[in-house]
Image (cartoon, rainbow, N blue to C red):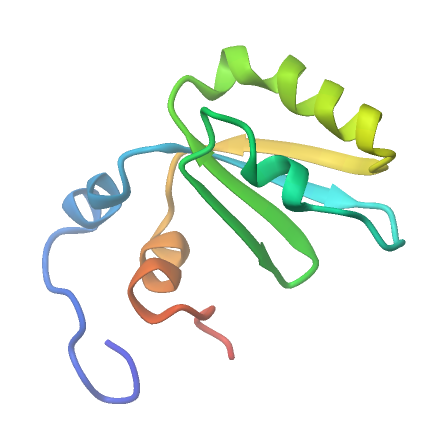
Length: 103
């Protein structure tokens, strides 16, 4: 539900399965970076920058982390933390509305 309108209706599990990909969130140290390098990775199916985090969606995230870290290193991107996870209901909301639930 968004602004009083139903935007998707299903069980939480089915809504999360709609996204279907693993998610990597990168918290970066402050600075100006060329984040386009992440979009160029062939296995990244979606790239978002939201609330100070870079979010990458892909399959098989567990084997992709070394490549992500190497690309960041080569581009001079300083990563503060890395979070690997399955999609959440927040991700579903962001997917359907283009913004976070608290905006």
